[in-house]
Image 1 (cartoon, rainbow, N blue to C red):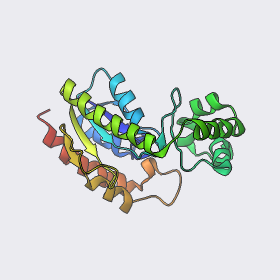
Image 2: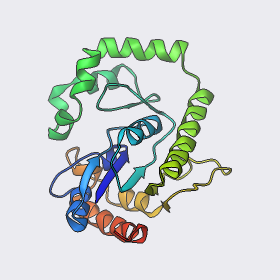
Image 3: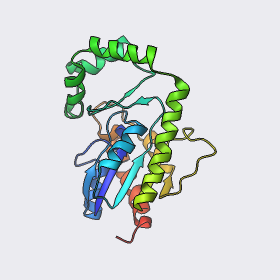
Length: 219
């Protein structure tokens, strides 16, 4: 069985206590993709289409504010990119082991916080509009659903509340709204906890998703 996780930092990190690896062991599954920090909806579509061999996709749908950064190992939230934040992204003294592992291509591409800040400001001045960003988000969302349908792929859609228009309904997979509650209830107070949750949170989320995965079967 091959499982792909797509989305943001709540499904980005591997490790003994990660719900991703707990599920891999439970279902004897190969993990063929994981999310990235602040992963955008456009990245979900991008990576999903590049995954050629997969039995189940578990998609942690993102926020319209997340901006896709091609050739990088993370995305960014366009509404939180002041000078201080840009310097933080390049400050190795603030890295934990997970940042170091999931951040390098971003550093290599943009070189310095000053360069990144300049590029982002140019983008916001000349190419960004909030309504356009929302349309791109909806467009990616619709294409994800259509692509899953075209390939007849089994899927679980993990939703963030208030991000979806009333006129949109998934035609594929199972929709999960409980995972967000679990994540919010077990947020880690430290920066180096896997998937932004406590160990207990990872265990609870793994158990919850395992029950949904069983509904997607037979395997």
